[in-house]
Amino acid sequence: MSSKALTEESTPCTVIDDTQEKKVMVKLVEVLSKVLAISLIILVLSLSISNVCAATSAQIEQATSIGVAWLVKQQQASGCPAPSGLTGGCWSPKYNPVGVTGLAVLKLETHAVLQGLSPFDPKYAYSTNVASGLAYLFANAHLGNLETPPVPGVYFLSPGGSNLNYETAIALMAIVSCTDPARAASVQGNTMTYHEVAAGVVSFLAWAQISDPSRVDVGGWNYDLVNNPTQQADNSNSGFVVIALHFAETPQRTPPTPGGFGLTISASVKNNLNSWINYIQENGGTDDGGSYYSDPPSGVPNVLRTGSLLQEMALVGDTAATPRVQRAIDYLVLHWNDLNFGEESGEEGWKGKAGEISNYLATLTVMQGALALGLQRIGGIDWYNDFADAIVGQQNLDGSWPGVSVEGTYLPPVLITTWALLSLEEASPNHPSPTPPVGGTLMAVSKLALLAPYLALLGVIAMVSVASKSRRLGD
Image (cartoon, rainbow, N blue to C red; front, side, top):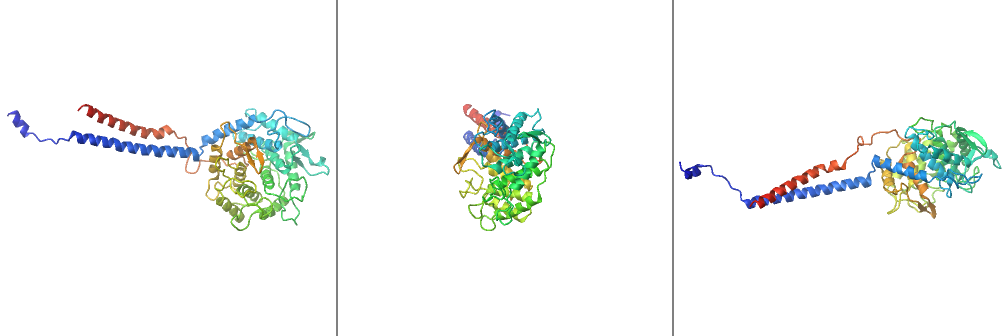
């Protein structure tokens, strides 16, 4: 059989035009490239959004670590004012040093306890800072029976200062958070245990509460070193005092669980406070449930004071189901996304304006109130995540947070940093037990692992493109 016959008898083959094949290859590369580009854009956006809007546990821990390290560096070895003369151990010697020192000490104490350590344990890196800070506080303690006329208990005040109930309340928080009620302190030449000093402070604050039943502001506190002062009570002083009383009332606990000294808050204090709550909470209108500053309906309620209101309600025995608590929660939900406020500026929220930090005193009071009532969410809002996102995102590179001016008064970075850190680490006797976040267990995620399938797709495109070019070169 001839070769021609073999050819003619063979099954005919379909031949694909080489130009057509090239077009298919080019089209395939174009499609794959577009898919890859779109996928990468989606991935990058998702990663960037997660970095901006969701602080991870690792980021929170890092922010806390560098923040505490910065805070410790601000403690002064000398130049701290006290009645006996200049001494050391304070923070912010020129701005309410007793109050700021108390907040810094409270932060360092909580930081130790949450690590399972006593704040005085030599293994704790900042134990000496805690001890010297407390020593400074006691250098500014006053025995009421030495006053003229005498007053009950013990109080604290910066030399030349006027924020007596603020500073006394903050000092009480620091004292009862030390985990050692039997520890000895010197108060105006008298040796007292921390427990005795704290009990004296509770007695003083009970006396300083407005108790005249004929007054509309019965049950509140203001700035003065008098019982039933002529000046109106306000829910800023009152809020700090009640947070401190809650710390003091909490039973003593073993680290890593924060606790207090288990002191008794009298029924009369709580009964009067109950009247104050009803007076200062807005009843009706668009701001129903919120807390005013002093004299309803002057000014406006705001988130900061409504956080204090929740703490006050918890101290008198309200629960999350109590109607007035629910009204306060509804107010917070309504104003959650409002901007940061100036005291009487009409801005009711906690969030910072463009280019400004959020109000970390508001995050602190809301945190205290929410934890006191066992609220993991406020009307469905994950309040801690929102606070953490803002706080971590607004931290300076050195670990601090910026100072701000409020109503003409400059609040220094050291004060703002204490508020931020106390909020971030939930420095409360109701600190939640470690639990997995909503939705499952938090796990570290490798961004390289997320990119791996896209890199593989890029490799496929490259291979197809090379194959296409190779065929063209072989023409």
